[in-house]
Length: 188
Ligand SMILES: O=C(O)C(=O)C[C@]1(C(=O)O)C=C[C@@H](O)C=C1
Image (cartoon, rainbow, N blue to C red; front, side, top):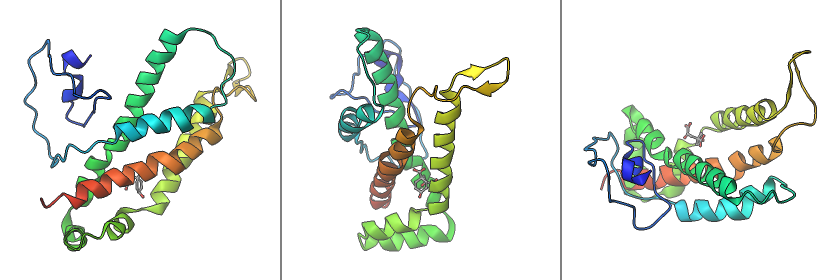
């Protein structure tokens, strides 16, 4: 898909291969972005997280031997996780406005990464994000008894707790790492 402009996306998709594929079948796009691109991407870290933490947390058992389908699902999930985390750049840019921009500017000049992280943190929003993702895992993953219009207990595909932990321990913290890095270079 890379040859069809996949990694030309304006909302920051990064390839998991290095160097990035560039032999486009379609002519490259000339997109403008509101972001100051620092080309920073943490896909190597995301890959390790996926293999060492995400997959084991799902308590998968057995071997269906359909490795091609599994690899396709892995790629989709890795790209979704990467996209979510690198969206931090867009979130960070949206926070660099109004009077807050002056606060960030002072912290950036002081190279105060912890201060930037504290300023961009919204604990209430984090709780909402985690609760919403956990609820989605509980509902979407369950079998619907459509005759009685209820979810069949014990049929979720992945443990909702694994989703809670994924957001709490990895997705949100890594999004913040990307946000802080983006802001640290916002004035370059
Ligand atoms: O929504 C925001 O304000 C974000 O910065 C994103 C996000 C997240 O990763 O979901 C990260 C940090 C904030 O503390 C809250 C939520």
